[in-house]
Image 1: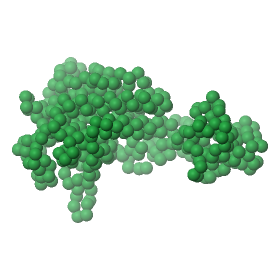
Image 2: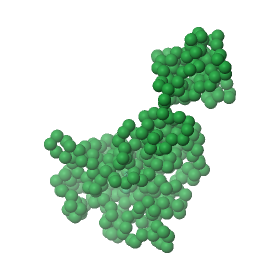
Image 3: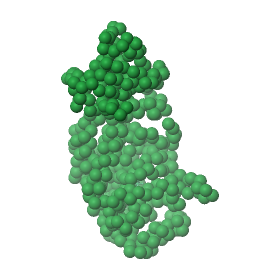
Length: 433
Ligand code: 4AD
Ligand code: MG
């Protein structure tokens, strides 16, 4: 199919005869002699008109009865037609069914339950809503990479197989690895700290895994995380990069994903309000603001969904909450020298109930402190020796963060649930298709 034209670019071929391939998504007939087929090749859709006299009679019959989702090859003339999406239609001179689909394509135009749709995700993906979500996902990835690449960051990827935990042992996925048990990566951060000592500003972007027994609309067991790490950066600089990157994402989605936002019926005005600057408040201030509300918690307790939602509802933008209690955060976080009961960490909370989209902060450069924390948390020391080497040989302040891709995409498209932001979501209850 070397000379096939992608449907997206048909409007550049008005008046010409072209060959296109695609799947029949809709069909309607005006009597036995005139058939209108909506054909899509993934890049776009176009109306193909199959008319008696223009094609051999057996092809006319084939067009009349072709089942939905059949694969077809069409030769025809591109005609301008302002009423059509894309501004063109194709008048067929040859119509060939490459592969006739079974008649019982499970996804129809009637309402299906989400469970059914997720079971048929491999087919559901063809529908307009998942396609719009995947295009937004691709744009979010591009925007983040552009932001970091233009900022001089080097992309250095992190391993998936690991012998230690970074984000607590409770959410590790063990894997049989020859005669050992190892774990799937929860984060690339520790390796990015090593890379930052070699290259300055770095990031990794890849799949991460959490055995989270949470059946919420924010939790996946496999998700993609983008993790910048900057040598010699402090918390303020870290928050600037979080804000700059998410600002770029919002801007790009508004600029380049108009048709997708329309498909998803996303209210753009809400996104337009989400351009930087973003409010920055401490955990302690946040708790003060929550006092007297249903979401009020005692100092020292971690945020859950009610706290995140209540804090984000106070602003119409993403909010940066910093300086969480040391006791509830990961071992590597640097205590605030002015108040060691809190760490120089920061979470970014998205509006509209999408929750924590970023977690990060400054790392402790203090070897003795880290050794003590590893012991206090009951972690085996040996697997962390390499990480401690980073403090033995040229310890430096370093800061970074991890952005959960699916949460950001779910928020951008107002998808309601992170499972719709992944092409093939993995949750506690789902590892197929
Ligand atoms: O806050 P987390 O656990 O931070 C870290 O892993 C740091 N080591 C990152 C770093 O500093 N380099 O996770 C970071 C983000 C969260 O804010 C959230 O957006 C996302 O990853 N995330 C999840 N997304 C979907 N499903 C889950 N189960 C997630 N767990 C975390
Ligand atoms: Mg977190």
